[in-house]
Image (cartoon, rainbow, N blue to C red; front, side, top):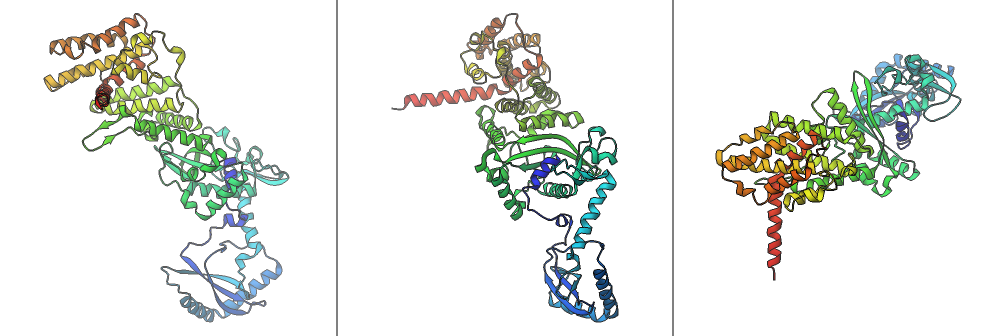
Length: 558
């Protein structure tokens, strides 16, 4: 964290230490009235200074005898001629256009040449000394040490414990400084220059490069080893820092960054450090870090999201518009669980792995998806199809970006025997990364079969009580077998076996035969495959029919 801030500092405009500490004047205070005194402290008049650049607000410092004598003499002059001086100040105030609304003024001490007292080197040195010595009060100091950030040796170093308030807080022993604050200069010594530079950089990052996605606050810290990139960053950050501000919310999964977009010509020479944090009671806790987030990875993630958005099988057609599945950080949050501590950690783990290009446990990921589908089926079954589309889209997205890896060693040799020659069989082939075993095909086709049964029930009865047998439940092999038998009986009861007798029914029966006694998938995998078939059966058939019509029209074209 500290090193990344230091690297970002190298990409910001260089400033002296006192400038880093100087808060300056508010923009409205843009008219300075200099009370000028001669070498002997005599009154020389009021002069106007346009702007507030370089104005230093600081307490008194240690001055030389000559400086103290001049300050004393000029102070005596001011007290003696105070009424006259304030009359001149009021005149100068009116001439400067100070109206206390659009323009406000400030008064400062200066010499006959209008050189301000706040510009004396002693004032600036005192400001720096006052702040750096406060580091020693909090974390100790050593006169001749090595800075852990810049690597300079034989310099005065300080313990930065609790000064910047940005450190790991998971357990006290991991804090810079260990268990005792006054030992920080031994465990994490930082020279004064680096401490001030990092503090200013942290303020810059917190202002422009901090944001939130899916409820997770984060910082993006750009860095580069290329001199040309650092120089370009320095120019851009000095001229238009607000151009690269992320705003209150910025979803890195879905949103393009102006920074990476404008530096696209440099490829991965520009990298980002992504830091998830939580700020509470003045404590700044690092919750997760991605040290190397490359622009190429962001492009890969955005391309994968666009591919899912274009996926025809996941699009719902309403009367007015198409409703695709759009992957974002909020999609991950939807399936990470509730708003408890464990779900927040799960979400951060997923996002950190996603941006770092790492993989997570596919079983845990699938478990989270299925838990959400079951909960939706129990609480709000009318949203199940919507939730299934997003769960299936997120699963495919995760495979595409290698967040989860398919285990092709599990691919069964009898897959060709179980996949039917039908729209549903072709759909299975299109998504072979998931449908890698006959058992998954059986579960999927059973879901399609259940969709047919519930469709008939709605036509015949205006309701689909058959859905209560599986919606909101984890489905076992025995459960799927029972659904097939009972579904077949329901279709026979309504006299609608003709809908399945020539295609889906024999295809499903054959799939069960091919599986035999083998059942090597988990109940959650079976539930997920079944729910995909149940929720997407209509859309798969709709797309197949449209494709067939298009092919027939093409054949009829002379």
